[in-house]
Amino acid sequence: MPLNSILVNGAKGRMGRAILEAAAAAGVRVAAALDRDDPLPADLAGADVAIDFSQPAATAGLAALAAAAGKPLVIGTTGHSPEERDAVLAAIAPIPVVWAGNYSVGVTLLNHLARIAAETLDPAFQIELVEMHHRHKKDAPSGTAEKLLSVLREARRLPRSSVRNGRAGITGERENDEIGVHALRGGDVVGDHTVIFAGEGERLELTHRASSRAIFANGALRAAQWLTTAPAGLHGMEDVLGLR
Image 1 (cartoon, rainbow, N blue to C red):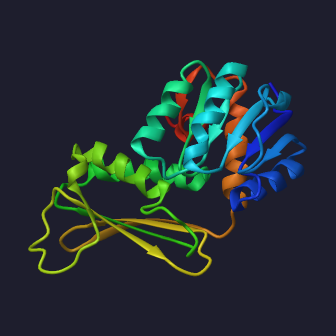
Image 2 (image 1 turned 90 degrees about the vertical axis):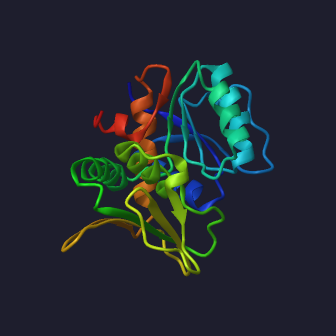
């Protein structure tokens, strides 16, 4: 089923503007371009799919309207509190949803490869994650980094308490059963992520660098297209690319 029209929530933000440009290039009609103070149309303006790159507090409201209208939803907003995330998950049960912290095809493959490396390499290959974004980004670690941490912890069977957000002072020797994460901010960096597997005598590094937000916008549109024939439930970009 072709993707004919979309509703974009957060249309004035960096990602919102990129999606509007990508939609115009792809010939996809924008049924509604909404931002913070705009009311949400009850019928989602007749759009085939709603796309949310807004604020964490706004996602649940759009999710409820999408569910009521029976329309698929793409969520790219990050930084939700546990309560906000629970509210979104409760609302989206009846509809197909892709929820990802990063819509880049390359980052999706980075997650896939990081899982393989974490499962294959001995635990003595200690894991560090470094991410960098522009100075305006409000949440840390990034949504992409959080997803990578989830993948790595699952692969190594480690609890959330294994994550070390930076280091300072006399920390003692590093243990194998922890994952270090470091968030750098500055300039106009679109998004860099590196997973380091540091062993004795060798080191493996998996890196993705984004130089344009167009890659995320094109990925979000690809997810929206995939949702037009997807079953109800929560999906990720791994599903969109057929990696699981």
